[in-house]
Length: 289
Image (cartoon, rainbow, N blue to C red; front, top):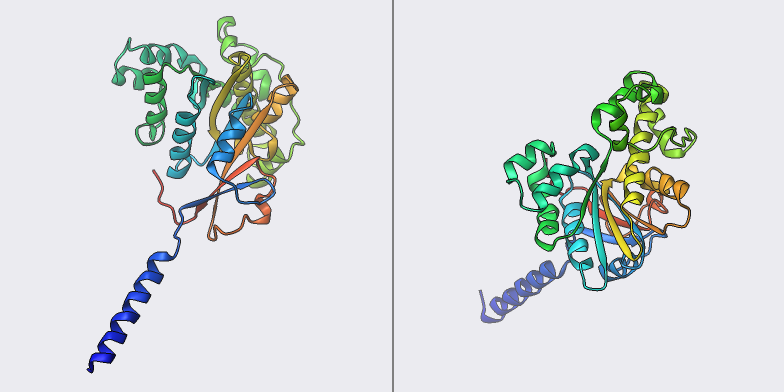
């Protein structure tokens, strides 16, 4: 090989190497509801001025959980009174949650009494520990699971008529508003092929209503209530969002949703207007479980 050809080969290798490393391999991209790319700072600025943020996650998506942590961390400033709430904690576990946040019980006791989800350690513990270390209120918002199961399996909302009086404090006041014609509820019926019927949708609705009720119950003026929930509970401005606006139309609510796509360069049409802000994650992203 001549000296010139050796140099040429080295230059080609350098160019190829530089080209390879210059390609931007992103794990996620952020969009507004119209499909325009936006910055993390623009989301942060918007939600810092609202009353309620509904962060719709995929429960096993690490990008969702990382951004939840980043947003609550950056929202926690002297000028913002931050409150965190979550679907993942049921309302009858609020005492255990408060005891742990106040260092009155250890973590093992907390996990047992709060009935934490199996992915707690990887996905929700960082936010709980952040709340604990910064004295940020954390609200359990979801209906106790046995009550939602009763609605599904034992005849709809009327299955809750026989609860002990003190247990009504753990659910949205009855009767709850209910509109089975909402697209999200109709989609549930379609996805289940009719199995479960109207009571399956009612079980979803009592969850949505209870979460909305406890968000509003714990919302004070000049606060930002940052709520973690599965994306289906707030997509398309329905679910929890619908109940929040039904209970109090004056409350200002912003939604975030998570979707997965093969191509991050454009927001697919089906995801437009799904939420105020969209987190588009590479569909090859590893799962937390």
